[in-house]
Image 1 (cartoon, rainbow, N blue to C red):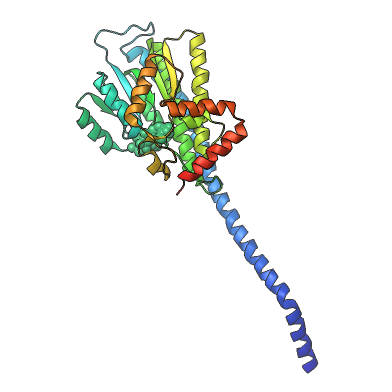
Image 2 (image 1 turned 180 degrees about the vertical axis):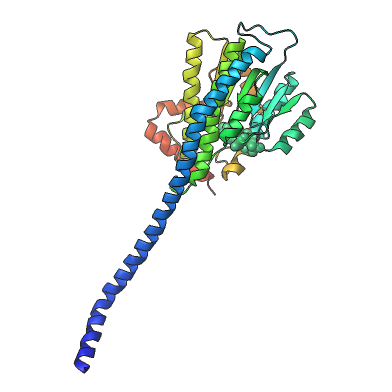
Length: 340
Ligand SMILES: NC(=O)c1ccc[n+]([C@@H]2O[C@H](COP(=O)([O-])OP(=O)(O)OC[C@H]3O[C@@H](n4cnc5c(N)ncnc54)[C@H](OP(=O)(O)O)[C@@H]3O)[C@@H](O)[C@H]2O)c1
């Protein structure tokens, strides 16, 4: 028995390091199993929301836009011939009016005498702004991340002539791509890309039918650069809007459309943007007042791409002469400084 015990002990001693390795391996397997469960749940969620989004976007949004357009020709003050009926009032529609750039556009356009239609999630902020302005403001609170809200907004706009549309609501998500929260990024794509795209199409159809108007898509200088490490998704959403605007503007120019479409591409602007994205400026920001004043002047000149501030104009110009890989690296270095 002694011999057996001694042999067993010897075997156990020899096997001990391998057993430890096995235990460590098992822990790793369990850990990776836990990780694979989460993405599956996540993908289920994404799959569901993507399916319903696709359904709503492909059918309902399109139908809502079509229905709205049909109603427009019957109900709205302006007819297909583009003539405004006497007494018709033309609105300036602003999304993201509860803060920053959108709020400043509201102040300026109200001073210029436009009745406003203001959109954002925070109703209390919109109400406070209406009180501050003391001019006609129709509040249409909406969460543009939600397709239902987007469709409701299109429907609520039926019968209201829009002369200026500031397609502005948006936000950023910062951090290394492997570390950012996927659902938040999908929300960002919903607001910065899907909602801006749907609203651009809807309002553009309306303005074409009604004989004119001006649309400003708020993109970013980020959208003119070849990529932005540590805010990669945000830069990509803004590149989408800048590219979309340039393409659509050219189509409108070719067909001599009475509608102007441009995009505003500022660098850093002092707003709540950084707090929402949880970053701080690496470069000094311009004021929302300057940004909006410059944008309105350039809209009058019908500029397709509007970059406020000579520093940012220089940076974008300089970027054209540098190899893309170097520009991306330099942008990444700036972005990294913004992370806490
Ligand atoms: N600040 C900058 O440095 C900078 C630079 C270049 C471009 N931009 C762009 O400028 C635009 C305006 O940003 P900002 O600088 O003025 O930032 P901000 O002060 O944070 O304003 C963002 C606006 O977007 C609205 N918004 C965000 N998510 C929304 C949602 N799901 N549904 C409806 N509205 C939503 C917010 O309203 P609620 O929270 O009340 O919904 C708010 O009114 C954005 O598109 C941004 O990407 C900003």
